[in-house]
Length: 284
Image (cartoon, rainbow, N blue to C red; front, side, top):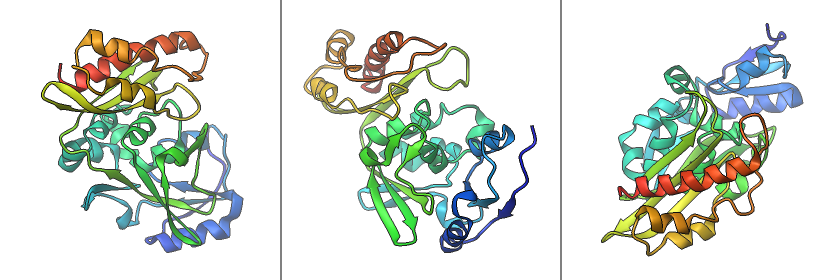
């Protein structure tokens, strides 16, 4: 299907982009990589009068260090995140997750920030961002504000980014020396996650000393099972011990019930994938 007609602007600064958003009101959409927006336009599920393309704003792209954090520009492609030596060293979980997004073509066009703002509960980046304790830099008419991951994901396809705001960067605390795994269950290759579990752990002398987990597609937003993280501390990362520690990983979740699987089936998957993710992350 062909999209409805729209005006197109490609600003070179964040300030110009914000001005265009303010002038466009509710009939404007922001374009980053386009891997979420363009299909919606083609299906005529949205019909904006104006599209603001962020692709020419150089400051929104790239990975850099800033003290004890990595700063990932919002329009940085998935492929760049998945292959970044800095990300692998300091936030290995993002390398694991970004490498599973769709196919190589999408990973080269789709953007890190665009996927996070889209906030699809089956998307592969929100849960790792939550697990890593990321924070989000959002530019708007009143300046730049920073929102923690716990407050960024509001509901299904809804984040803290307002209609007149733009996500400019994601700050990820360095977890140097931590190992990670992202276990994703799908029926066919390159499908959205039916369920996935993100895990990053620190192991010292054969014992887990810290752990952070995130659940994908187990609710309308990503979920961090903090109680399970505490259960893992002090354990040797072997299957039996980990299996017991993650037994309640799906407690309190509200997974969807659809053609890909019932809610109970997804809860079972979450337990299985959590054990696999933790054991693989720990290298056992």
